[in-house]
Structure formats: C-alpha cells, structure tokens
Amino acid sequence: MELKTLRPKQPKQNYSFRLSSPLLLASLSISLFLILYYSSSSSHRFQEKETLVVERMPMKVVDATVSTFGAIFEKFKSDAPNNKTNFILFLADKDPSTSLSWCPDCVRAEPVIYKKLEATAGDVVLLRAYVGDRPTWRNPQHPWRVDSTFKLTGVPTLILWDPKNHAVAARLEDHEAHIEHKIDALLSSI
Image 1 (cartoon, rainbow, N blue to C red):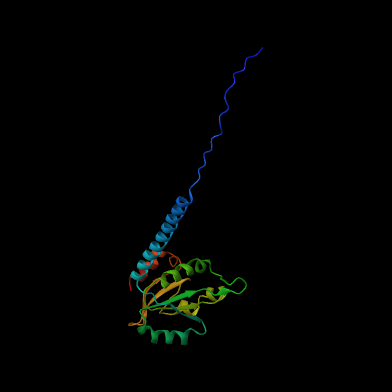
Image 2 (image 1 turned 180 degrees about the vertical axis):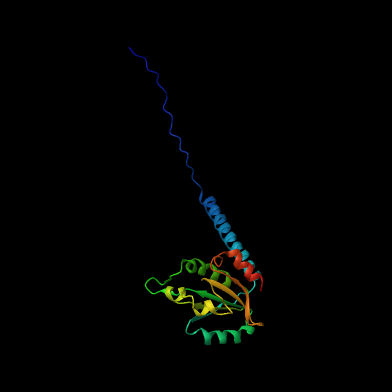
C-alpha cells in the first residue's frame, strides 16, 4: 500500500488587478496631459529655434549651354552687384536616357553643392553652365578650357564670382567640389 500525501488545494493566484473607474480616469487624464504638454513644449522649443535662424532667401538658378552662355553670362555679370553671392557651376550635360549626368563626379557633387548653397543666408545666384556631352567636353579646344577667365580642367567646377572685379574670386575643382568642408570654406570667404 502506497501512502499519498494530500496537499490542500491552493487557490490560483490572480496577478492582474482592476482599477476602479475614478482611478482609471485619473491615470488616463494624467497620461493625456503629459503627452499634450511635452508635444506642445517640444514644438514650442522648435519654434523658438526657428526664430533664431537667419532668414534664408531662395536660391536663383540660371542655366546655360555652350551656345547660350555668352548672352546669359553678360546678364549674370550685370546683375551680379545686386546679389549677395554669385556662383558659376560648370557641369556635364545630362544623359537623356537616364536623366543623370554622364559625369560621375557631377552626380556626386551636385546634391552637396545645392544643399550648401541653399542653406546660405541672403541672395544667392547660381549660373549652371553645361559643358556638353562627353565628346564635346573631351575636345582640348572646348571654349571653357581655353577661356582665359575660366581655364576649366574638369567638371564639376564651382566658381565664386567677384562682381566688383568681374573675375573668379575662388574655385573648387572637380576633385574637391563634393567635399562639404571645402564648400563651407568657399562660402566663408564671402
């Protein structure tokens, strides 16, 4: 005969608890209050930061090709003294089949340059001068390669134009035009 020890049955323990209606209502009210308070105060802090930012003017962009550059550049030079900052960006043409530049350096540099110029306070004018397709640009007698003002050796080339002297004030060549701190240095020279 086997002896069994009988244990009294224990009631199952229920670890959940019930909130009374007033307590539930109070906790929901506090939660809602905290959510609204912190969301409004964070947007308020954001608005305060916005008022401290120098007002940004939209960047004006003018496009030119090799064939239209002469007339557009003359207008650019005559309007330049009225602008805070004037840039010329020499770029490779876009491939019609891909809508991207045939020049990988241009594809890499353009978004960085635009971001930096758009963040510049004041009136900024950018003349984008497209050098043509690859065979046109590769020609050693390309007009902007032999031009004594520009003396281009590669694209993209970003030029800060000096409106007083009608000359190149500073430039970033193809190997450095995508580097943010170099663009910042160019902008700080204004």
